[in-house]
Image (cartoon, rainbow, N blue to C red):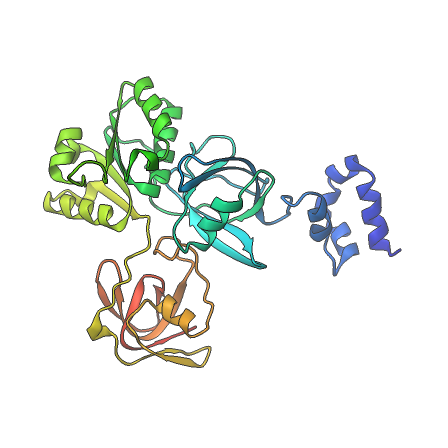
Amino acid sequence: MGTGIMALDSLLNSPRKLTRGLLDSHLVESLLTPNPVERYVGMIDPVWSRRDVRAKVVAVERQTPRSVTLTLEPNSNWNGFEPGQHVGVTVEIDGRLTTRFYSPAGAAAGKGLELTITRHPGGKVSEHLADIAAPGMVVGLSPAEGEFTLPSTRPDHLLLISGGSGITPVMSMLRTLCAEGHDRPVTFLHFARTPQDAIYARELQALGEAHANLNVVTVFTREGTKPQHLTRATLKSICPDYLAAETYVCGPNALVDAAEKLWKRDRNADRLHTEPFTLPEPTVVAADATGSVTFKRSGIAVENDGQSLLLQAEQGNLSPRHGCRMGICHTCVCRVESGTVRHVRTGEVKTLNNELVQICVNAPVGDIEIDL
């Protein structure tokens, strides 16, 4: 038996030694090279890592037919999050590691990490977790990131608006405020398809009853004869002084777009903070679908069909890094050497010269060369 293996055997037969410093010893790792201690300890405790953030699923709840709520217990490398941020979740599917980004739903100072994930048709990770997530499952985590967050000095008046699975970041904001004892006015407006799709419905009702400063309203968009959506009339009936409130909106593109148009017309856009929570609708502008997309580093060129740069790269059998696929996480940023792009959600057109761009939400306009 080699020296390194004997050292490991001694550690495994003495749990006290294993937990009192030797795990972090560079000496042990060097003895085991090229089979680092991380690999062996991972056989005993798959959550442990000297560097990586990992978490074990400790509870699973299915609040609605389309969602799964996971309570995670991260390892000591986890540094927490601010309410409203998102975190990358990495799972192994068919032998390949795949990452998608989700917003924690719990209070920022709470124990553990809560993620509520809604199943999306064709969503590789959301369907995988909805189907097989169970206590004991281990996932990888990225550090929390994102600017869709509450200011450290909490506003005197808050309006939180969400739609569908976009409830998670604003739910985190609400839970954090309640945990802090925030006593200024808060209006929480959530849009769900039907009562069966209303995530956190019971908790929201309980919070509204327990906190005099909190007004909770849920609107069902597919109930009744007339669909209910975000309008100025809706806002005035629920929160008459909504223009005085610092407002946070997260949800489908249609909800975010409606909010941005309303606040822009009211000339109050500086009080509005938004984050879309669904994939942009795949629109193709016929006039843009000309020329070719050249992936310089790979030596591949494809005929420009007007779709996003990410989709066209994948159709060219490339596998660029990506995460959310909706323009939130910035994992897919690549350098455009020359060419023009159109943002698939806003329609904004930019001509680029050696500039970085998110390839999941930008489509080429004519010829383009990208460092990929």
